[in-house]
Length: 117
Length: 179
Length: 139
Image (cartoon, rainbow over all chains, first blue to last red; front, side):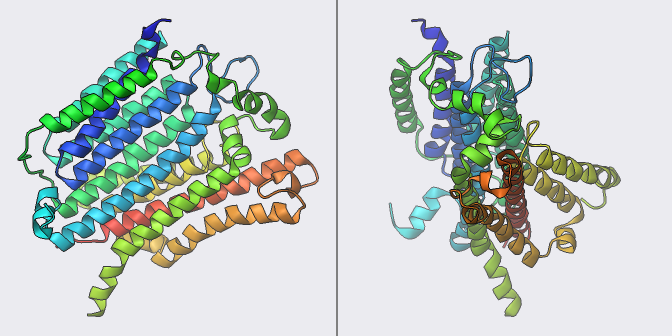
C-alpha cells in the first residue's frame, strides 16, 4: 500500500495542528478564536478530501458524466460552515463583553484579576 | 494534474497559517485568516465540492472577516508578546499530530473509489435521487430532503447563536439609553 | 468611509448586483451550485457592504431591529411548518411527498420552501449579528 496516497490527511493534520498551536500558545482571545477557525477550516478540508473520487465530477447530475464525488460530506460541511460562523460570532460577542468587564482580552491579565492562577 | 494544483494550494495554506502564527498585529492575522479561507475555497473547488466552496468563500472571506475586524476594533488590535516559552505548546501539538498521523495509516487512499465512505448511502443518493427527488443538484436534495432533520437542527443552532449574540451585545445599549 | 467617492459609487453599483445574485443562488439552487445557506450569506453580505460604507444606520432604513427578529424566527418557523404540513398530509415529518398529488411536485415544493426558510433565517441572523457588533462603540 503506497503511503503517499495519504498525503491529504497529513497536510490536513499539519494545518490542524497549526490552528491548535494558535489556540494554546496565544494569549489574546481573538487570536485564539482565529486559531479555532483555522482548525475548523482544516477539518472541513479533511471531510471534503474524504469525499473525493478519482476522476469524479461535482455532484450535479447531468448527462455524459458517470462518476461523481460523494455528496454527503458536502452537505455536512456546507451546514457546518454556516453554523461555524454563527458560533464564532457568539464567541466574539463574549470576547467583547470580557473586554468590557475586565478591560483586557489577554488571558494572563484576566487570570491575574481573578487570582485564578 | 489536479493533484499538483491541490498540493500547491495546500502549500499556500500552510504558509498562510504559519504567517498567522508568527504575526502579532491582529489586523494582519485576520487578513491571513481571510486568505486562508479563500485558499480553502479553492481547495474545495479542486476537490469537486462546488457548493461548499461557494459557502466558504462567502462566509470565511466575507462575514467572518468583517465580524473579526469589528471585534478587534472594539478590543484593540495588538497582541501582547507571550511571556512564556513556546516549548510546551509545541510539544503538545507535535505529539497530538504524531498520534493523528499514526491514526491515518489504515485510512483509504486519497480519491479511492472503493473507500467505505462511498459504499454506504452515497450510491443511493446519486442513483435514486433523480427518481425520488427529481432535482439535478444532489447536494440540495440531500440537504433539504433526505437529511431535512439535520438541516432543521443546524438552522436552529444558527437561530440560537443569533439570539445569543443579541443577548450579549444588544441589551446593554438599551440600558444606557434609558439612564 | 462615506467621503471616499470611489467606494461610494462602486458600492451603489455593486450592491444591487449582489442582491440579485443572492436571489439567483437561492432559487437556482436545485439546478446548480447554491441554496439557502449560500444565498442568505450573500444577501447579508450585500447589506453589510452597504453598511460598511454608508454607516450602520443605513440598514435600519430597510430592516429595523424588530423586522430582523421577526425574520429570524420566520425562516425557522417556515422550515418547521413545512414539516407539520407533511404530517397533516399523512406522511412522516419533513417527507415532502405529501405536499402535492405528485410526489415529485411535492418534493420540489418542499425543497423550495425549506431552502427559502433557511435563506431568510441565515440572512437575518448574519445582519443581526453585524448590527450588534457594529452598533457598539469602544469604551
